[in-house]
Length: 378
Image (tube, rainbow, N blue to C red; front, side):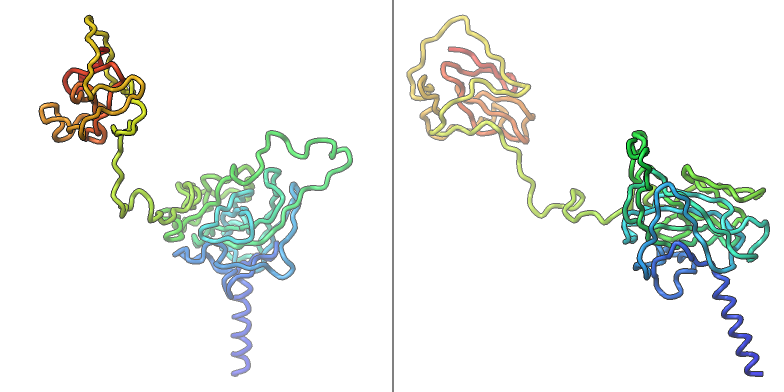
């Protein structure tokens, strides 16, 4: 009796193991134990590719551009089939930050096309072709399956090395690719994802007993669903379909307060000093003072405050006084305005404050109210 029970248990366990769909070819990546045949976790914890992967024994499968390739499966639990996609990612290191898989084939009614057949017969293979737009190199392939019956999303990944197709002697004299074909994966649609918690956000599809129709299936689409009605998905929860995975902001970004105080904007015109070699002939901003010729020419002043004609140094007075309160120097001033100081110097309002007085050009003096500065030739 005990022997019979043990045999029955062994057969039951064997049937359970064999019933789950597992990618057989191309040779899949090695993943954690018991992970390959399971659906992706509802939390998205094992996305992509059932978690960390490593190359299988024998290395990646070599595939030629333009040649038909075939995926085969072991197991019987097709769960009524569903919607499947083949997609590619550059390199052999898929991760949550590197999971921008791009679709090269979509099949509606994959695994089985027998209506109402939940677990009947060996899973049908899925064929696909590496398009000309894909450059030769190493890629992580992905087979995703949205189950019609359970609503679960499966993903099994496999490493491939893409090589250029062989060309005849006549073909070698012609361009290998059409100039209208853009190389790379960027123009291919992103793989469809849903029901993966934080990975896919609010995008979810409940079991409808219908085959899900993807928003962006790509150019190579195979319909094997027969008379089955498709359920149109209104969203794609793939974070890369929305412009990429959101990464933590840089601590030094503008959103974070700076520990150092902001620098004040200073005037580009140098402050007057005893070593100044030249004085500005006129301010050079949009509100620059207008220069007018007086009708009567006054004699050149001989005071020490007059600039020298040979060296336009600052007036030989003690530290020039700050603009007086009557001149509008107190409080905040209007940006870009000019102020006449002592008739032979001017200040500019920069950052809400007047700059240090600057000497005018030789043989000129200033007059006028705040913001109405005029330079008059002597």
